[in-house]
Length: 181
Image (cartoon, rainbow, N blue to C red; front, side, top):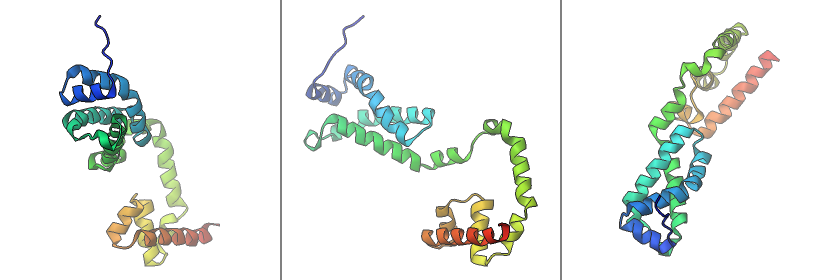
């Protein structure tokens, strides 16, 4: 068994800039837990968080020369790279699609209950009541509740401000409440 190398921050930085495998191994072994915790606060999915962690270390390998000790400690730079990588992942199209595309196997036990729920919505006449709303309320309700659009997607689709979408949805719900209470 070989002896574990230890580094001061300056020694570690010098070894990293010279792309010494042992230095990257040391960096990974000593920093992965802290960096993973940062990622998991932003991305709860374990598999995706692990992927981002690996991407962080690749980014560090490729961009270690961009680190400037005058601007802060190495660990602070690593935290910023990690946080930015996690945030960038959540903004990626693939990540957003993965959130929308859950496997049906996740809901096998709930299928019968959900079918009854959807029948219930139709039985109480919700669609009919929504169709009777003012056009501006009806359009946002249809997109939100029946098509599953986010507020941002509704704003973009209807070309109206986000605040207007939220106000119209709130007013539509208040209007519908009058019919069901």
